[in-house]
Amino acid sequence: MTDLLTGTETVAQERRLVTELPGPRSRELAARRSAAVTSAVGSTLPVYVERAAGGVIVDVDGNSLIDLGSGIAVTNVGHAQPEVVAAIQAQAASFLHTCFMVGPYEGYVAVAEELDRLTPGDHEKRSALFNTGAEAVENAVKVARVATGRSAVVVFDHAYHGRTNLTMALTAKNMPYKHGFGPFAGEVYRVPMSYPFRDEPGLTGEQAAERAFSMIETQIGAQNVAAVLIEPIQGEGGFVVPAPGFLPALAEWCRRSGAVFIADEVQTGFCRTGAWFASEHEQVVPDLITTAKGIAAGMPLAGLTGRAELMDAVHTGGLGGTYGGNPVSCAAALASIRVMREQDLAGAARAIEATMLPRLHALAERTGVIGDVRGRGAMLAVEVVKPGTTEPDAALTAAVNKACHAEGVITLTAGTFGNVLRFLPPLVIGQELLLEGLDVLDAAFDAHVAR
Ligand code: PLZ
Image (cartoon, rainbow, N blue to C red; front, side, top):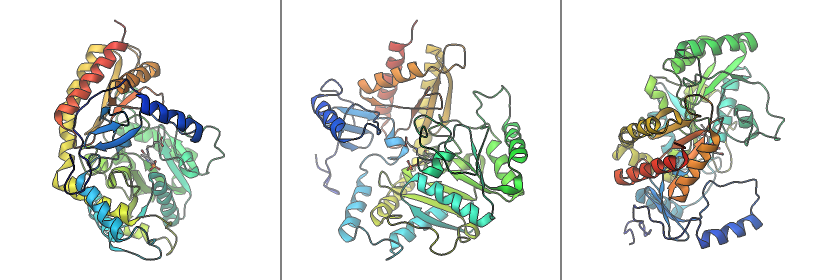
């Protein structure tokens, strides 16, 4: 079937396995790949993609897989969303690139207007656009340093902010992100995160924040801190939701200390957690906010948005890049944002939570190997442990993950200890498809948990 609007093939929203996984065409491509592509880049799935739409990915052998990963929280509006595809096609037919620093265009301005409007807080804001989440984070640090005249950046245990040199320094986990790649950028200080499942029981968000402040004040000095940078819900670190009160306390400490509070919403942004941005769940208003991933449905685009006086503290020409805010990416972003608004995808994320949470809790109850079920909206996870303990079980996590893939359901892992299974379905996924994905997950646990 061909979609009349875009000319793209539509894809049946179903799980259908017609070969073993990987099938023969995928195996052929895997052989070509290993002769051509460095083994330093890995892939989660054993199959190669031919097309995708909505909540389904079809591989080169004709197998149809349920996507509970969204290309790591990117295709929030669904794969190949027709209005987004049409916007990309129309922009591609007009012009592909001029470089905004050379020949400016409306799309960039319109995306900045949307970001200024949609991000938390009704203060005067300005935005700049980049290509990747890591680039947005790097630029947030640049802005904070110029605006404060200070250099120290505070980050948290389990944080993930990217793979460039500065963002590797900001990222917590050694393997695979940092190992052997140092020396890393300086003036980065790590303090304890609020991690309710692993903190002493009963530790409140405010107490966890105090623990961080005392470390900042003794080891760095509040007057040296340019920025406190945090993911409101940690992504790669394992969907860690800090205890209530933690984020507001950090924001308040920054206000008192003259430091910039930066929310990295690269993974949590754009309706993923049931709100436009995860900071909203605790009415936190960041000074700067980084966005990427879900902003443009798969086209490379990232944003940095914040208080006008901070963003404009940088000298003209101080921020930029050849491709930042590419016109095709901007067209994709504007169409995606329109779809999110018109289809209330924040509400869709909350509906996904309402479907999934009881299922995940029942799974935990039945299997005894899930120590924690957590997340918000369509950003949910289970932390897999040895029964009755908090001891991570990365081997079981990997086995269940692989079993899901073999049955045509795309799941992802995360976590400092590799023991978190995370779920990031496209927000438009159909209820039946989602339930079928959960059935497969149940069966994968049952097959691997000893009784
Ligand atoms: N900040 C919060 O989640 C990207 C990375 C996967 P880029 N997360 C997925 C991997 O193994 O590389 C991410 C994020 C948060 C920043 C980033 C970086 O975004 O667009 O990958 O640079």
